[in-house]
Amino acid sequence: MSDSVVLFIDYQNTYRAARAVYHERLDHHVHGQINPRRLGDLILTKSAAPRKLKEVRIYRGLPSSKHDSKGYAAARSQIATWDRDPLVRPIWRPLRYPEDWPNSPEEEKGIDVQMAVDYVMGAVKGDFDVGILMSLDTDMKPALETVRDTFGGRVKTEVAAWNTPQRHCRKLSVKGVWCHWLQPEDYAAVQDLHDYNTGAP
Image 1 (tube, rainbow, N blue to C red):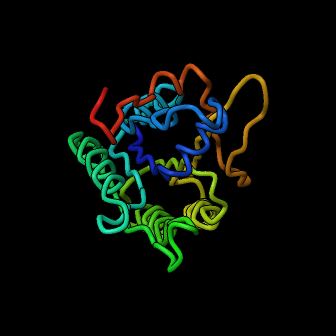
Image 2 (image 1 turned 90 degrees about the vertical axis):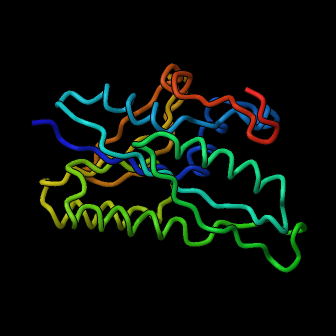
C-alpha cells in the first residue's frame, strides 16, 4: 500500500529562498514562483517507497485591497489558479500593515502558526502518513519535532529545500528528519513564470 503524502508549503519563504539560490536580486519578480502541484509530484518521484500525493497545502499572506489593490488582485489571481487543481489547497491570512506603511513594510502575521498547527493536527487526525514541510522558518521546528516524537516514526516527518551544486543550501535542520534536496533542474521543472500582476504568461 502506498503512503499518503501531504506537502505543506510556506509560499513566501519558498519564493524568497528560490530567488536567493537561483536568481539575482534584480531579476523579474516572477522568478521564484512555483507551481505547487508540480512540486508535490516531483518530490514524490524522489521517494524510493511507493507514495501517493493526497494534498498540497500552500500558505501565503494576502495583501489588503485598501492598501495595495494591485498586489491584492495579483494574489487573488494566483490563489484562484492554485485552487483550480483539486489536490491543491490554498490557505491565506491578511497581511498586517504598520501605521507608518509604506515606510515600514507589510508583514505576514499568523501564517506560520497556522501552518504549524495544521501540520501537527493533520498528523493527530491521521490525514497523512508522510508530512513534508517546505520552509526555512525555524518556527516550524517545534511542529516537526512534535510529530516526530509523538508518533515514533509511524507518521514520517520530512522537509524539502532548494539546493545547488555550487554550495550547500539552508534547510530546516531537525534530527531524524529527512530532507528532499531539490536541484536546479527540479526548480526549472516546477517554475511558474506567469505574471499575475499583468496576466501575461
